[in-house]
Amino acid sequence: MEILNQLFKNKYFLPSLQSATLFAFILLIYGAIGVTTHDKDFALVLRNTNVSNLIVWSYWWPLIILTAILLFLIIPTLFYSLFVILRRLSLNEVE
Image 1 (cartoon, rainbow, N blue to C red):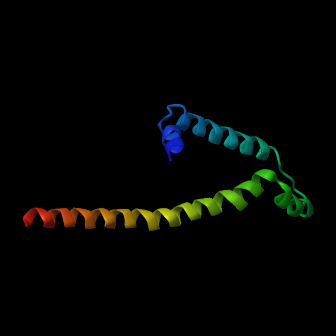
Image 2: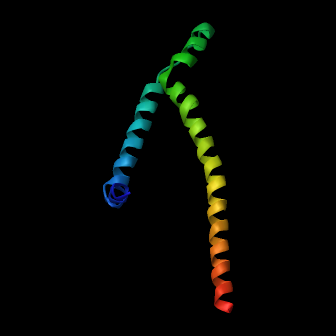
Image 3: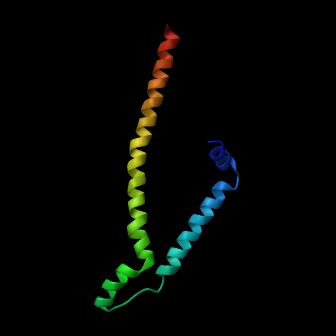
């Protein structure tokens, strides 16, 4: 746990994570630019072999859905826990 605390307290952690994400997006955009065709048969092959499409549709969207599900499960649970704790504290003050 101490290692994680030190990592999150490091002032370069968040900018380096953001830089890596920006670099990944730039690579995805660069990989997708100029990949066009008017041939229907080749378009069927291209949609399965274009790395940018594969990454976005196979990994990016499922991760967004998973993140949304987790946030809708975790955040209400945290608020409810906070509500219960505050309620118990307020009940203890009355006694």
